[in-house]
Picture: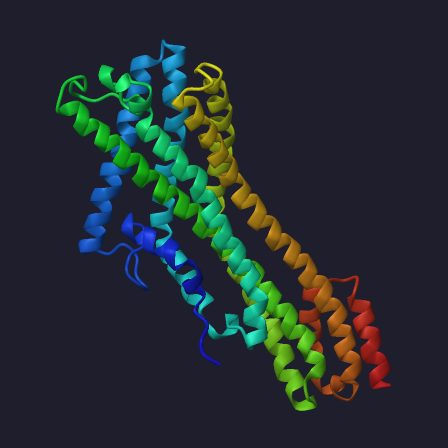
Length: 368
């Protein structure tokens, strides 16, 4: 059958990462090129520059609690985005290797049935991607227009409190700064969201490979005698490759996820406190509500797909153990030649010490 392109399911995610400078050309990291120059300029202009001006504002308004909270809960999230971009770009080579490994032969579906088997996982990721964009897009839109909605635009109020080395209360600097803030927060949020959803996609791929492995093991019982050994070894290699792939994924995003959980918990608390200080029916109140919803979905994203991986790993282990012993009974005439000492040790590593005695018992009965 034709090669299945795993990246096709997340093509929109990858396209947007390319637009924000976080996805260089295939099979390379950030080498000197036109794209690298674009990435450096755009990230520093719209992400790091925006964060710098907001951070400087904290030192200006630190004595005003209301203004400090209004600045700091956004600034913390934005600074984390800069840190995530840094780790994402620094580990781009490792990420590219993961994507290459994902398209390797061992991870390919073996039949149309297996393609259908993994489609629910791909669909759940796409649905979550859209669901994540909904509160984020709404929050960004409300942030962009709330000075216009409450009339504070007449007082030259900006969407975000920030310090600039020029007077933003006069035209055209006010209009220029207003557009810069809106463009920066959209750029930053787009990069942040798509980094999160790509990490969720990696976890989704691990779960999909568990589904494929379970199906391969179930099909062992229907193999002919000559095919059994080869397909059994293939299943073992697939299992070990999935474990290695999951470990490399964890190395790639573990620090990002740690920072995200800590920052999200702090910013949700600060946003809820800020919500008590604004008018309940104001546009700022609605933007805060959607912001809290966005941060909650962001945490949920990691929890959901991480839990899916754990659940599928448990199901995989149980199914492999059950289906494996059923398969052993149907292949008894070939056990002596198949299960040598090394292969027995591999199964000991996979299934654990509790099931290994049962495995040895079956082998002994057949050999007798």
